[in-house]
Each structure stands twice: as structure tokens, then as C-alpha cells.
Length: 168
Image (cartoon, rainbow, N blue to C red; front, side, top):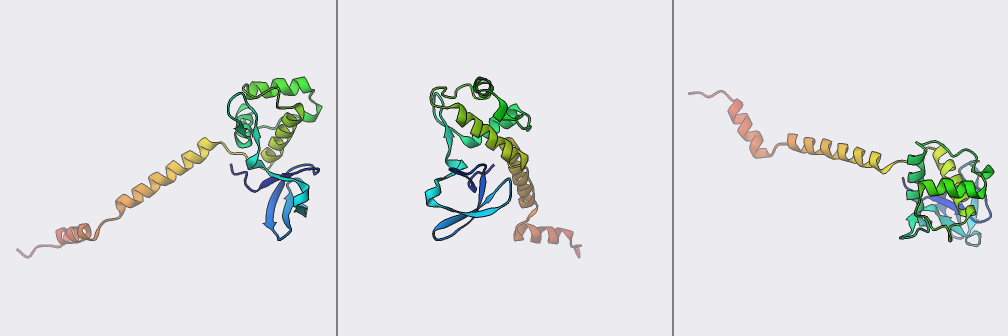
């Protein structure tokens, strides 16, 4: 899952995808509506890749938060997190990420993370890393078998000599 091109803009609801970069602005597309607009530096743009969650140890990147939510919910959405109380959200989030820092992570942060997860999940943008590594290992094994089937010129010449009938 690559979050490099997905952004959040202060004061704007939802998530955005970066389309292109101009001289004074970034052109973004709202993931929900599909509308494109310029986003200027004064909008306080944050990339999802740069956001992390405070924990008791090292900060947990948002990507890992989404993966844990995806695994815990079996790829399903969270049913209407806006209607959940603050305590319900804290309990829900604590079940998934027990090491999150309860003093520095506010209910509004949890709500945003869950809403962003729902939005990305609806669009099918959340993938588990095991699937990616399995696909890579299958591709690597295919490449290795292709490499084994390629013969050196010496091997080809030796095979051709062995295949030719001898005159003796």
C-alpha cells in the first residue's frame, strides 16, 4: 500500500489524491467526489505517508494503523464512527492498537484515522503486505526458472554436437 500520493488538506473534508504539481499549487482530486481543485501552501497539506500515531514506544506510521484495522475488521468498514461515543472509539482503537498513547492521541485523531481507513477501504486501496511479498516471491521464482532454462553458448554447442549423428 503506497500512501505517497494521498493527502489531507486542513479545512477540507475527506482525502485527496495528488494529480500534478504546478508552480504555485498542487492539483488534487477529492477521492469521494472526483472534483479537482488547486491546493496552495496556505492550505496546510499533509501527505498520509508522513502522518504517524503516537504510541508508548516508537510512533506507528498511518500505513501500519490502516493495515491493523484491515486485519482486525477482515477488510470491512467501521460502521459509522461519527455516531460512536468517545469512550467507544477509545475502546475500539485500544483493541486494535493497544500500545497507542492515550494521553497524546485524541478522540478526534482516532475518528479521523477511522474515517480515512473507511474511505481508502471503500476504494480498495488498502492491501496487506503479505500479499505483496507472496506476489514478489512468485515472480522471483518464475524469473529464476526462466534463468535456468537459458543456456550458455557452450552448452548449446555441446548439445548440438551430441544431437548430430556421428559418421563413424
